[in-house]
Image (tube, rainbow, N blue to C red; front, side):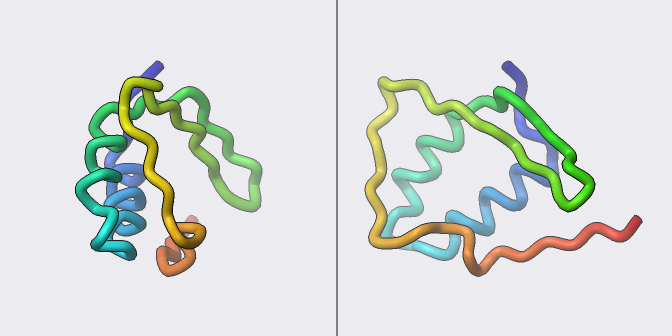
Length: 74
């Protein structure tokens, strides 16, 4: 398993900022999380992450990340 690259960390921080009430719990998950797989499909890139089971689960009222667009030229 590997650490997040700068772009992944920035995207996760933006997603966490969408829901301030969950930010502390999500930060704890992000600190413990590791990358398990990266995939560039040509239509976008996807990063699979794993959070250790010892880290408390976070239940949110909705799907997170809807307000976090990203575009990379090239």
